[in-house]
Length: 426
Image (cartoon, helix red, strand yellow):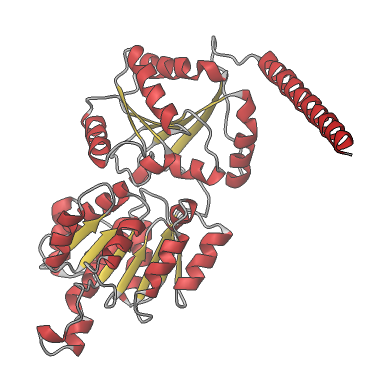
């Protein structure tokens, strides 16, 4: 199948050819024809499967070939509603993903007259308002900043014809459900909705059926699965030696571009500093850094100026890094589903990748949860010189028991003190 066989507009085909797109991916083959018919689509697709083009191309085709609601109902400019209505809205969970989708959408629409705008936090509202005032047809936005513009009356959602909710599972994980509901109330009931998610929990499915109308299902990869192109390995190691082992792996195996995940913002900064002390150039991105600093760090990583990018889950969401070969879980994720998102950064577009997990013995419960989610056993290997010390778990258990005993003794003491006070009051 070719993109020509999908009956896409010639202006879109010209842009795709220039971008080097030869044939559609599986998700594009399934989703584009459905979306072109005006159907609501509920798609399960991981990052790297081509999902951005799967919703962008039919969206652009619709805007190119169908008259807008304003054109159908208004006879002149004065009849149009105020607030600079947009025709299509793409909602993403993070700044990085919003920028990525905006860049892709702009590239696809290069030979059309359609205007694309982007709005996310951490950057100037005034610049975004100026772009919206210029008359954007399509807006790519994060929920919070979009609502800022709605309340500021710099954008109107009253004429949205196509609504895309990208990475819906991450939207819910980040607590955007209330914002999404507020946004939904401001859009017409009669619209097309395209819903994309890498995983499908009960909450995600409920959200989908709340906002979709008789959706067509697209399932490129089974829900909650890791890409077959990603080789996974777990290295058990003592917690205090994780940074040492990571530096050894990067140096001895000559890994050139490594994305590392940590649980916390402070952890990401510390690890980047520790790797630097070992002679490995590393930068960190997290929610405490400005958008400019995060973009500079990402640019340095992509260009090869630094070998390691250390990130938290939220900061790394939506990162588009071509040919990324190595992803490392320095800390186990809080949720098993996040493991799928993390390792989805590599092995993209049919390329091979490696997902390495450094697991301390007290994190085995997290590995079990991941293996239950994936319904598979992830291979483990003990590296010589970095074998974990089993007695540490026993020591930790003793410490936990001693701490619990202290808490019980303290509680008993308080009870006796309170009884004494009660007797004295009598």
